[in-house]
Image (cartoon, rainbow, N blue to C red):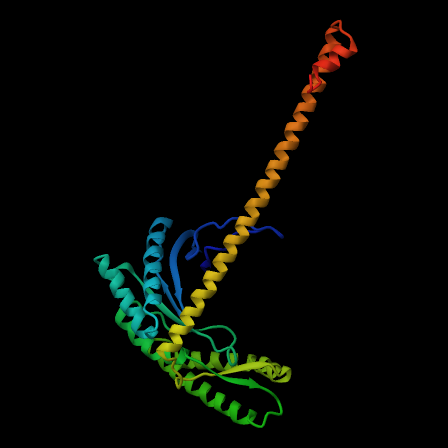
Length: 306
């Protein structure tokens, strides 16, 4: 079977970190003794990825294109994902004079429901912009969540909240299984896996209730963020990124200043040590040659004031 690794993973020894083997966004896999490379980019809950290549260069070219698509999709906020991602894909590949299908572009939606499911729910992979647009219109409402507060045992509204969450989860499963079945996956197998994962997550749900700090979300298509909310969230994210960048620049300047001071101190110590060794070599040379001279003459030669 093929084993894939992301670009930020590399072979590490115990307690040792090595340099990145290839850029972030490139996956490397070993299949039947052959090495393959693939470009991939995440845009919120959507994974865009290219076909597999035997060499790294074409995968890097695809990574540049996919990064451009992701950047344009982010710049179209506050438009919903089902509108801005297909538009960004069409615009970028139109500039290149080709289509996403010719490049082998593929898309996969990944949904998280931590209260009911451990891991990620993956939708069928699609290989055309039209199919991706159709899947996004059905998946996007399932990926929106609204906060409904903390769940605590003893809360008089706990039963009603849990009942609402259960109904939303059942509705979500029906929509998700419909999407998987339309994508060619086996509905019965997917339903069985959902039931198994739901049973495995039961202990975690009970632990959240016991701890009294579990945050739950209404998992259904009933909530949609307004354009103002999306714009405010985008501005806050940019502000956080800017503050983090300023902090990194300040930390780098402090480290560089400390390194310069340390280097200057080491140079001064090295120069003093070299002068002392030169002085000792001169005395040893005089003693070896047996040159006549008084002690006062020798001291006067090495006196800085003379």
